[in-house]
Image 1 (cartoon, rainbow, N blue to C red):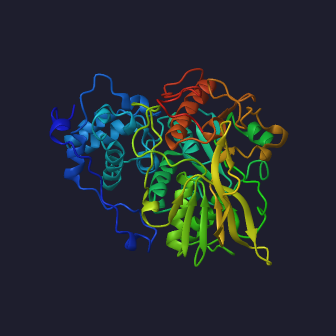
Image 2 (cartoon, helix red, strand yellow):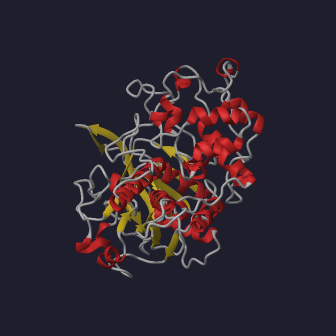
Image 3 (cartoon, rainbow, N blue to C red):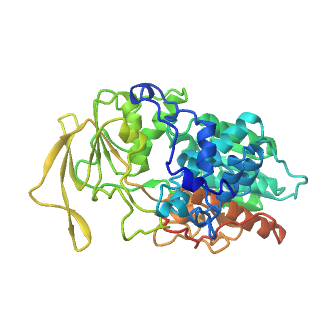
Length: 487
């Protein structure tokens, strides 16, 4: 274990400082200052010798958190990354993007601030890349079997890396012009610079994974042809259909889904030409939706030079502490101030959008909103409380409803009543040889679920092809970590 008395002598939770707001909104670099190794070791030493380490169950990947905390405290970085990679293909992604349900389940968190698990995790992988410890692991032999992975987000990449290492010939298909899915075009650089993604893709290429960007399955290659060409297919396209807000004025210019806006911004930051880019520069911006995607829009709008940014959430403001109905070790819904919120703007709760108001040119000029009231468990606008908020750009960030299944035509697997693709306990869809991993089968969820399901689906595919597998299978589709329900 780490320092036996660490949790008694170090009671303060220390995180790296964020760069000053006036400085960081002038660029797209990550918001955190480099971590101090002495602080990281001190924080790792707070990890207790728990009889039952609930952080294991809090993480869908089953990360061996106490073990790599101990190794970090001892300064054994090479051993720490080996232990971390044993359960997590991409800690550089999860260490930056995961909301850390493991910390909510930390035993120390019962009566003290939880161990800084997420920060220790990202420090381990960053040191590993800097030290040259992240090396390609090509298979010793090839099986002669071929697998197509459709979608290059975290689930698809995890499945592809596991299957490649098992000796199969794997091709990853991505409809966008670059590999990475939402990691590439949905996540702003101030949360994760794309150099981390590119470094991991280089490793995967060296291992033998083949990447096919700019290929839209269903258009460029039919699904039937894909199943004919490959021995197995993994659908990992994510849940990309945005939740609509069907109210008057929705067709006005200047009203967009959040992902339309973020994709164009990420392409522009990458140096690509974007014609008629949706931009917040010089505009009054309203973001509808209080989740992570909404926060990404807020931070992006600040960097583009918005005149004002207003964030609307239909529900009540969460409490600052753990609610009684979400006791430890559940992951609670609490009020948080992300780096984007820290940079400015206004957050309004109990705000129901009633109508988009436009000008004579057909452009949005304002939102009519009302106070939310709860009637028979439903959230509805309260009559007589309507008001207008000026707006030149409105971004709808209300989450996602499921995969874009219309691209499959008649060739797609059956769907559940919630719109996701139906699969069994072995991730097999209703079409023989076709498997489903990540949000495409689970619905909108966390990045750790995507990677865990990618790894588990890879084991199921390997077993399907070879009759047995040595690949680990961390979760089944029906598994749910403590307090972390799929969206």
